[in-house]
Length: 366
Image 1 (cartoon, rainbow, N blue to C red):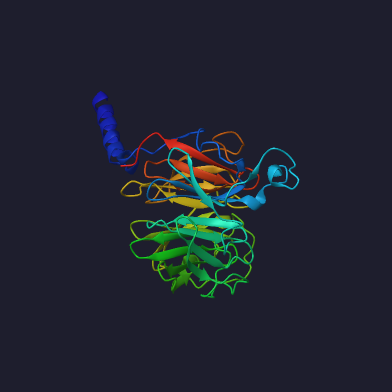
Image 2: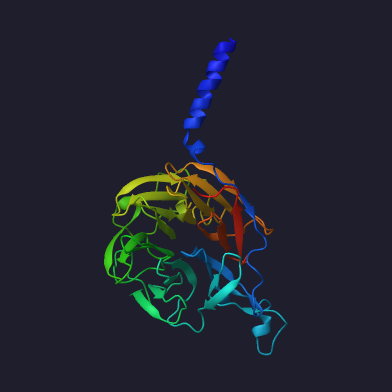
């Protein structure tokens, strides 16, 4: 009996050693409440629409100065209502220690979006901006300091719908595939598709809807966890995140799912998360773990106010952090997240939370 027990234990140990989860420790995270440092110039964040990390591990924040209430921006009113505060710039760059580096955006930078939403910093340091208001049908690419408009894709104004290749439809987020020089757009709050452009010239390349099909603008049925899987993306299509091995992970937010595609739009698979979630849905954004194989993905869920750690190979949830609340380390409408090369996670919250938070990992990427 003892020999049998030892054999069973030995076999279990071999299985554990060979399991994917043992190949790399699943990271756990702890809030770093000291980041960022206090803002200069009596500034205050509005809703933090997005966060991004550049190639130097500088953290960029896209926030909405127009969402501050009169008491929050009281020092900027004429006459001043109170001593604090004034709106911070829309685009803000911080170093790894949380020191403010530079800022620009509304109202001085033109053209500009009506409601700030998407942010990406490419390898060359260019800054990509999208908006999700009704007439935000264009994407803007600016120089690092915001002083030059490098490229415009689309035309501001009413959208032409999900099969119009000249305009966007309230695009949520953008990411550049640097090797292919392609811009992947989650399009978005008005349209129901992923669309791809040349990131150097802005030339249209291709687009697709759910399951790689032609997208439709027919109004979808309200989400029901018991209904068959929807055949079209709902609004918003909230992310289109490339991986190094040639896949695109799409956040179909209110359908509570991630759909996985090849870069040409060929459908691969889909995964559902907390499928009973109604309201604003469970799949808001994705960020890749910065190890060589991008072993994990982080998924922010702004309805349940949690960040899931997913095993990228099969979408399995292997850990979570965060909880609904307003204390440090908790979330209210966690809208976006980004990861630096050391595995630090940065989150941005909208509605009336209006903050960015940093979470430190217990293990470094390899």
